[in-house]
Amino acid sequence: MGWSWNFALMPYGTTWRRHRRAFHEHFHLNAVHNYVPIITQETQALLRRLLKTPECFMDHIRQCVMTTLIRGFDNLTNVLQALLRLLS
Image (cartoon, rainbow, N blue to C red):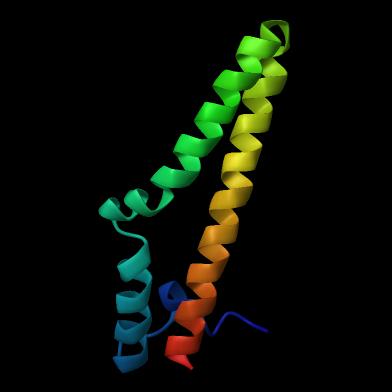
């Protein structure tokens, strides 16, 4: 596969600008709003688990972090696939 797709390693030019623009569209400071529903749902699930079994606090925290990351990654994967279709 190589690293030719990585705009950080590309020489500056038209292709670099196209990749940079596509990347910035989904990874800017305000992009966190796309992840608010996932974070909210997982936080609510965490609180329900804590109410049910507070003695398992660390297990619940780990589960919340991991499920949030996995769901965020799935969301990110969908975004990246859309970007790749645009760049192709």
